Amino acid sequence: MAKPPLTYFAALRAAQQRLAAAQRDESAAQFLLMETHQWTFTQLVQHYRDPMPLTESQVLTDQVTRVCQGEPAQYILGSAPFYGRNFRVTSATLIPREETEELVEWVLASLPATEQSVVDVGTGSGAIAVTLQAERPAWQVTATDISAAAVAVARANAQRLAPAVHFAVGDLLAPVTGHRVAAIVSNPPYIDRAETAVMDESVRRYEPEQALFAANHGLAFYQRFAAVLPDYLTPSGQFFAEIGYHQGPAVRALFQAALPQATVTIRQDLSGHDRMVRVQL
Image (cartoon, rainbow, N blue to C red; front, side):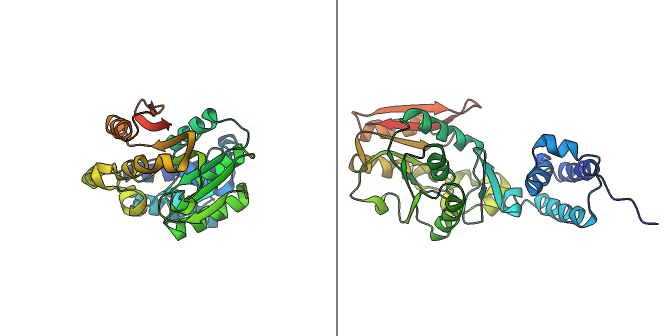
């Protein structure tokens, strides 16, 4: 006699138990179910007692096996939520994170909603650029990345969510040479390779190295920006970037040294860690 199918609740609990036993984040099970169906948490609860089709149960089992082995759930599904929208992600792009939403909030709050030229450097999946364009339709947003594969992913996200974003492949600000803009935004590589041993295993194994690591104790890209910002920003322009949680003092010092007339502000994330910098010319 065949066993009755699992309910969604039973399947969720079984998946959570497997993840806990493998010392992985149990919330991945809920994420997989909700994202697969595009359910809210309330909708998931409403389906708790429904039987899960056998084929779907097998898919979830296989997905959980991959998470137990360290693969991020976002790469398994090929999508990740960011600022209320779903973005396609691949091994060519970082997974967008909640801390970067706070950077986006800072940019949105700092610039008027009227026409502005904004550049997102190192766009990856396009999460920052696409979100800014979607939230501020009057802005002219350009996104650059040295990785053509990442730009292809970002362009696909923009076509679906904010088609007005312009894209260019190139190093740092090279694609917009000759233009001055109101704001430059970046979530650059900022991890020191000396920190590799304490990094999350799944990040180390699956996310693109080129988007993670930077020379000079993780400060190389901030040093490069500091050297060229006056050539690319308008006289009252602003630069925004995400930083490592322990980099606040060093980042402040290097921008103040390179741009003594600028106002440099370090902002903490909701967890109380230094996470963002703003440089106002």
